[in-house]
Length: 169
Image 1 (tube, one colour):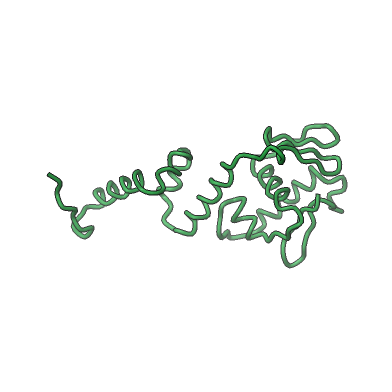
Image 2 (cartoon, one colour; image 1 turned 45 degrees about the vertical axis):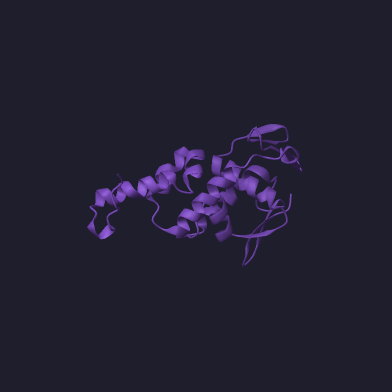
């Protein structure tokens, strides 16, 4: 025979945590939890709903498969294979960190759009706010050094003053 659930005011902290974990395990996020087991601690420990939403969006975006027609992309002397995560410039492989490659992929998929630093932080890093947007600027500098023939005179990743950046490759 099932016992009536206690009100939270009468439960110990341990009982509350156990109930929350059970709800998480059987609730609507359970499919997401199963799909991204490595992110489980992040999801369980996240107390801010906006941060949770941003992280869930980022995880789902990264989990989306690359369409066949978007598997490879070339611009100038640069070739990108999104399936193998390989970038070639003048036929020579370039070393990219995971975040640099993810940022490049985001730029390519939003080619021609003016993208703010905040939007890049939210969509690529998974944050809805960050103390400084210099993180984006530092990654842009590294991308330009790797992709552009003249990083000081970029023609692929342009700065849109007062807004952010635009990829035109």
